[in-house]
Length: 480
Ligand SMILES: Cc1ncc(COP(=O)(O)O)c(C=O)c1O
Image 1 (cartoon, protein in one colour):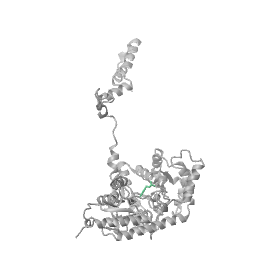
Image 2 (image 1 turned 30 degrees about the horizontal axis):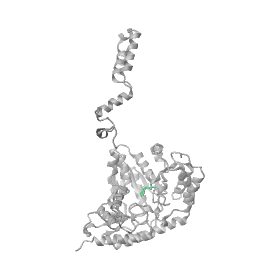
Image 3 (image 1 turned 180 degrees about the vertical axis):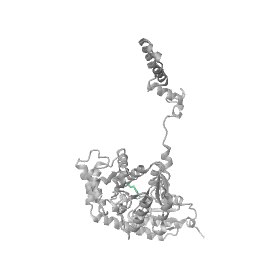
Image 4 (image 1 turned 60 degrees about the vertical axis):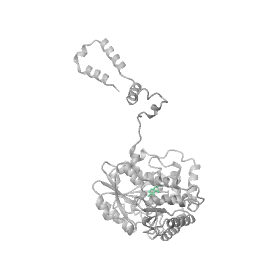
């Protein structure tokens, strides 16, 4: 790097023809002068620092040294874009808990049933991991898109429910469904683009979209229609800069399962608008009501679909961090529009799921017995039923729709029936403090004065928790 003085001398040397007549000795001295004038990098850095700090400041150990202006600062985009998060609110509720309460604390705030013995994963999945580790075949770095046998296993697993066959090239392995969301939104975040997200929804989408400067437009899920997508509003919200709409099926936080006919309407609407559908199917197959699970990829020939999923929920191993992003797109639209290339670039600069979990995946997806899935569905049916029936016994909360899938139910809170509760956050805070029960304030998923309750807990704990919620509501009931 040349400094200004040296650049000036060089320009002068180039421009002035008389300079050519100078003796070689004079030129040698001029060059020497240039070298002396040109400061080293260290000198430049020191000068730079001196502009920021006085000599007194840089004396190590003095108070000024630590309070002076430094050359680094935090990325404010991170703090401003994440907004209200589920983890943030749950941490706040943890603080409210009364350490002196002798009763066990019961968490109905997040969907991780792996802590309960009745939700232990299948023996086949555990053995597959142990074998993969012991084989010593999976200690290397994996390819950035995922190992071929594992991608083939996902393609075969998902193709069972599709009218066409996925290829391993359609599958990209990710660190849980979380990273699949990150990749999908990063790929679509062109300047000026906007995305349609469900309300209520899963706040990671909002946080990631905001972080990527992708404008968010919310469409409503309609409680009076079993939490179906408000299709009419989609057409009004979208414009020429809309790139995609997100659906979560089976639903978090509503516990709904979209019908085949409804998904078809969604696909036709997206086709009309020229947008793709991101279908979050992390709760895929976790259904226990009337509607069977239909993957959005079934409509992949109508509209291109990015299917996101993982083994976190169906196999109840969220800590194994194995997910996927799949292009369910038999017409090859996502290849033609270079979305696929962009996914690969994004994965190339991201971390990968552990190789031994990828090594175990073909066994996990291909060999898990139907009995295991039936047992889990039956416990969820039982606990969702307990939850739904107990809610009916509590005046200030109502449930518009019996849950039929996933692990959650949304209930409406009527604060006007309560004496000293301001809103959903206040309700959850006081409930945690007085009853050692944690539920999620609806504001975390975009619905103020609603609550999200997970029923994926041990049935006896759920009965206990619902009893405590009931006595809490009775205690705080407004006296006439
Ligand atoms: C709707 C939804 N999508 C994605 C995720 C993240 O899934 P994973 O744990 O596989 O990263 C969750 C986790 O709770 C979720 O509820």
